[in-house]
Length: 134
Image (cartoon, rainbow, N blue to C red):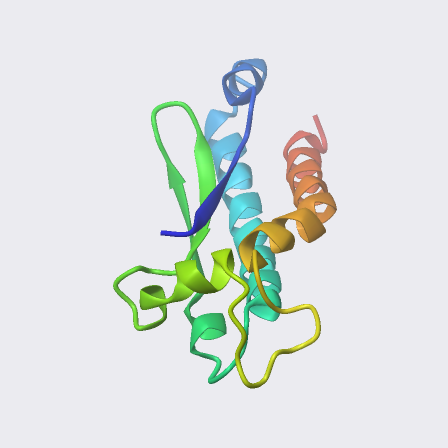
């Protein structure tokens, strides 16, 4: 599976700081991670090699949590039709008939590199909304 995760470091400290509102914080972080997922899916789809569009349409995201963190994962399901070749398309210099400008190798990595400033601003905006009015 090709994926990447965005972890919120210091989540426990943030939750302790706002102890009286931990549910509100978790909800805001979850909203922000969902926003980040949508941004990343769009950009990764734009950078994905394009022939029939199956790979671009197959990129998904999900927001999850474990014991310590909430996170967003952007991925191509390996059990999908595009999953059969997504890894090869991301990792090699594979070419297709209709290569869009900017599309090609390392489309997931390049999407994250391009959108890092947006990711940070989404997190900042959600934290700002959480503390607004306190």
